[in-house]
Image 1 (cartoon, one colour):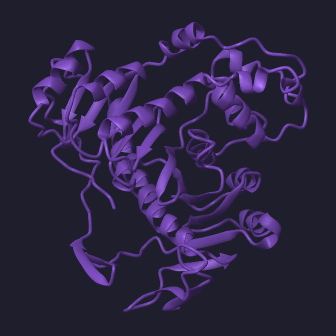
Image 2 (image 1 turned 45 degrees about the vertical axis):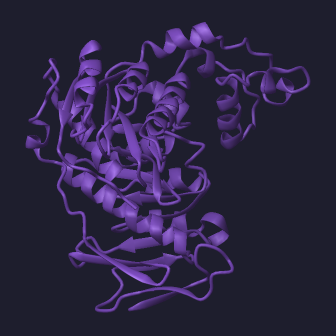
Length: 391
């Protein structure tokens, strides 16, 4: 098939819409549903991300995309009991691919609501069962086990979008797009981010970046390669825990992603794990309630006449001092940036979210200030000399 007609473009008024190949066949097959314009933008960006994560780490990878940026990305490392609980998977048997999906979806569950999923490996039944219970628009993978495909075909009353990608497809080196009737052309960004030499230039006093941290930094950088710029990514134990995308100011990226990383960590606090939810409260409603409970707006769910809608008894306030003490326990986080940090304030903010290792381009006129700030906290920071802007 050389062409696929779409219902509409980015918005319903943008018709006609299609995707097509000028030479050869489309490298994907629609196994179920009807993909939209934005679905396919998410699908093709997310597929590239998981393919590179698998190549870099040797582990199954998954990502959860929304509006052409990842909400989460991860590789298939086993989950702790706490992570299983906050991802609502403590009653599931998890394969490595299912673990990768749980981590990708669980990093920022609110942003992942209604996502498009990419899987690096053939989708198995365990992963399909997890996808089936979430609010999602579609999935792309190199293949599907028969049971997995049947599960996904029945999702959303049979309309769930299931795409199979040709894993051998390689695009032309030059890529083009049009804006306002004007064609842009550039060489595809084929930079490889799994080279150990990438972390050779370490200007900080601390030059120790352990193997697990290098893996996490690679995950951060590969994730940023397919995230709308400016962007930064916090990673811990094989999964992104906070992604800041598309901000005009880098400090705003660092704050946004850091706040997401903090929320991910706060969800693991005893005060949150022990919330007395009523039976039958849906996962999305739990996510929303937890998000408000750990924010400064907690009165919105703890007020009389409100908390009874969610809880069997009124929970205690999760105080600012309790949250600060819990956040201080989050350590060993890696941080990647798609370009250099222009000021040390980014490092200050990163330190608050447990960052120990950093990978950034380097080359700012204030590199000395950035390095000095990292040295103040004993961080190891690599200047990789590569910018990863994506638009």
